[in-house]
Image (cartoon, rainbow, N blue to C red; front, side, top):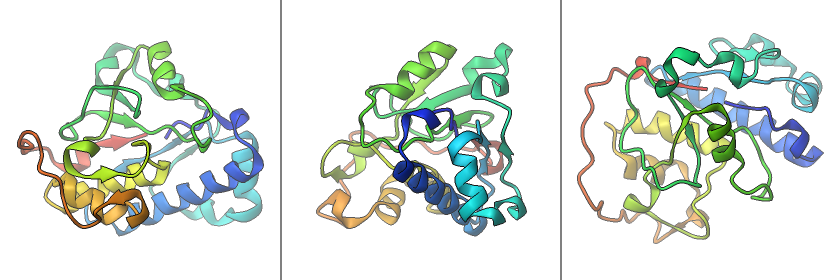
Length: 204
C-alpha cells in the first residue's frame, strides 16, 4: 500500500485511512490464504495517528510498516513489469491476480478531489496500471472508485471464493454501493482460471 499521499489528506481523512489499514490487517489475519501486504511511506500524520490511537500496530504480525521506504525505493527497477498500480482511472482490466506480481493499492482518502493521482504516480514510476473488473460482475451506484480497504478485502475474498470476482465484490462492498444487491451481472467473457498459488501474490 502506497501511503505517500499524507500531505494531500486532512485530519479526518488520515483517521479514515488508519481505520482502513486496520481493517486490512483484520482481513489478512482471517483470510484462509496468505495475501501479502506491506505499508510504504508510513510516516508524518499517518504514523502520528497510529501512535496515538492504534499503538498496538507494532505487535501486528506479517504486516511490515516501512517508515523510511517509499514506493520508488521498494520497486525492483529491473523488473518493473512485475508491478501493477491499481486505479479506477484506466481501461486496463485485471481478469485475475497473477503470480509473482505486486499489486499496489493507493493509500489515500480524498473523496476524489485529486484526479488521476494514482495513474499519474504509476506513469511517473514507469509502472503498469490496472483496475478490478467491477462492471463485468456488478453495477455500482456512482463512480467505480473503491475504498483502500475494500481493494485488499476483495483480493482476499477472490481467493476464498475460488477466484470468483462477482462473489468477492458482493461479499465486501456495502449494499448502498451496489445496484440490485445480491444479483451478479453476467460477465462479458468467462473469467479464466489461474494455477497461481495465492502466497505468490503481493499487495503493496
